[in-house]
Structure formats: structure tokens, C-alpha cells
Image (cartoon, rainbow, N blue to C red):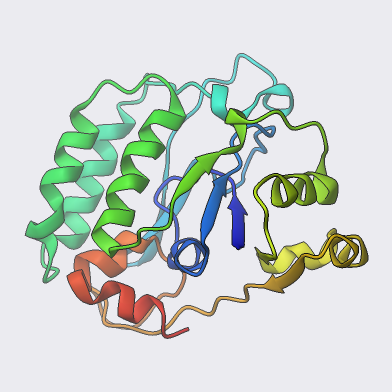
Length: 228
């Protein structure tokens, strides 16, 4: 049983999805505290000037350091959804598969989102379906968990019968490899390198949101995503 674990993410990059594809089960780590300036609520899209962030604004009345990701609320004062949709239209309207996907985003950004995680759930469910990735997902908030950092990852892996944990590269900085070995779990680090592919503008910018790949390459996106 290969398990991967990652925090929820808005418009995730291709490596996020490749790790899910290579797993038998993916755990969405939504019960942990939100970290400001992380990739949870923002990601990059390709533009004629290189790239730009698309960020979902969050309510800041609470201290982010004490707020679980699953409880994040969106700040709708800035009309962010309309701005994001206009950015997608202006930057991808000439892409080969623009018409294939844009109706979904039109509907997505037309809805009155209040909480952050339902937005991400809807978006990433669609992206997984579009990439034809069928790995089951579960949320960490659905299970009782008491540990943190390396012990939390081990706790989740044991809870779901993992024999291998597919970790991001930064796992090298904090995972207790010996403890995983003692519990019969192999750690494999996922060092994703963005493959080069044709984008909407000249040149290539790596590590864009996966929608950059979808708008440009459609049903061929998974095959390209896996060429890292």
C-alpha cells in the first residue's frame, strides 16, 4: 500500500498530481494549521510576461497560526473569483484546449464560495477527473490524530496500512527514517522535475499550475505529467 499525504492546494502544480497518481491512497492533510505564504491558497499561471500568482484571499481576523486549514474562510471583499476567471480567459483563450475546460471554471467562479476547502475539493476533484487519475482520497480531519510532524505522518501511514510512504523532497528534513523502517514502512522521496511542454506563450516557465498543462495539452496531459 503506497500512501501519499499533502495539504489541500488551490490550482496545484503537476507534481502534486503525479504523486497522487503514483499512490494507492492519498490523504488530504486538512486538519493541520494553515501557514501564511504557503501554496495552500495560491499558485502560478502562465502569462505573456512570464507568470503570475492567483491567490484566494482568506479572512485574517483570526490568527492564521491557530487556524486549521479545514476551517479557513474566504474573504470575498475583493471580487477575487471574477479576477481569477478573467485571468484564465485572457491568458489561455488561444490555447488548444481552452474550450474544453473553461465552462467548468466559469461555473466554479460564479458560485458564492464561503469556506476555502469546499472550493478546493470541487476544483481538485474536477482536475483529477480531467487527468484520469482514479486514486482514492480521504481527509485527515475525518480520523482522530494526535501526533505532529514526523510522528503524524507515521501515525497516518500506520492507520491506513501503508507499506510505502511517498514523500515530498522536504520530508528529508524532518522524517525519522529509522522509525519508519522499524514500523515496516519504506520512505520514497518524490523529486518531481517539471517536464518541458508547449505553453501559450513563447519560452517555457516550469512549475505552473496543472491547468497550464490541461489548457495546452488536454487529454495528453497525464502522459506529459509523467515524463518527469
